Image (cartoon, rainbow, N blue to C red):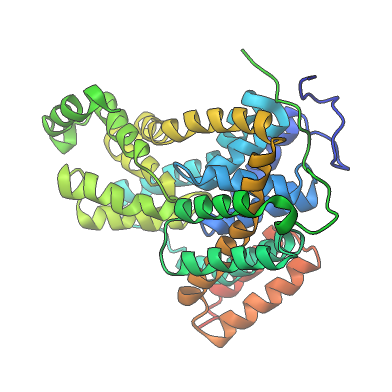
Amino acid sequence: MPPIGPETKTNSSSGRPSLPQLVLAFLKIGAIAFGGGMAIIAMMEREVVRHRRWLSAEEFLHGVGLGQVLGPFAVNTAFFTGYRLQGPVGALLSMGAFVAPSMVLVLMLSWLYFTYHAIPALQGALLGAGPVVIALVISAAWSVGRKAVQTFPAVALATAGLLGALYGINAVYILVGAGVAGVLLGKKRIAKPGSPPGSGVSADPPPRTGRQGLSGYAGMLLARGLPATGVSLVVLGFTFLKVGLIFFGGGYVLVPLLYQRLVAELAWLSPQEFLDGVVISNLTPGPISVLATFVGYKFQGVTGALVATVALYLPATALMFVLCYGYGRLREGVYFQDFLAGVTPALVGLILSAAVLLGRGTLVSWQAALLAMLACVLLVRNWPPAVVLAIGALLGVLKLLA
């Protein structure tokens, strides 16, 4: 099979992007992707699938599904997209570009916080951006759902994904169950009759470019043998690496994991410091997992922030290399296609569940609900998400949503 490269023809009308184009696209997404989790996925889908047409909706959803296994799935989806378009180098650059804007902002806010013990007053802007984030999620669910959910079995799987997420079932269990259902039913019963057997950029493989055994006991001794003010880079990285190995279920699962480790067990942070770190992570675009950046900055400045963040992402990144490599070679297999056919509609249900769950705490007034509906209309009419987000943030700053 010929390797994927810039000259390879694809099913996309826009062709394959160059590395600079890929980096700039994910820098843009990372700079405006507020809301965490599925809200970021919605922004990514709009840019990669609808606007630039680099991936099909089906292949993008496969990436979201693979990204649910371990670590922050929005970061993993950026990795998957880059891998499919430009191989391992594209994967790492896409992931780095996506995370970079939020890391820079968290570093700035962390400096302000630990210097002045105050958080900049951005709550109004965040309040106004919330309803727009709900609209983005609904828009993404509609965009992929109208293509992926067109038969009764697909509707049933999407509904199961929605209800399962609303009842708190882990996303990994939902997707595995849907995949097994896909194997039992077969793709022909789930996908729209007459649809092509495969879609996406290319079935060719991407280009090639060049457990804790010791960690459990020794790491515990190292971590507990140092006071909070004496946390070294090695201990910092080691601690976040261990958290990364058990980081299942998406960004907000990280919050209780880090609280248990950093506050309850190691006493590195006070409960108030930890809460403020979560707030700072939510005030920035990108994944909430940049909470690691805040913690690392406290002990070792910018270097500590980088070490903590990289260590947290490292296990998931290594696993995504394996999954993306296997995806490129197995995606044409019958059973693998059946499995993915079941996963795809379930992911649509998961995306919708995010809108419901986020809406409970966001659409608290008729003004906020009206803004969400207007934002849906503007997004359907292809207004740039950054512009719609800016409108919502301005309304929040002007206190027009109370």
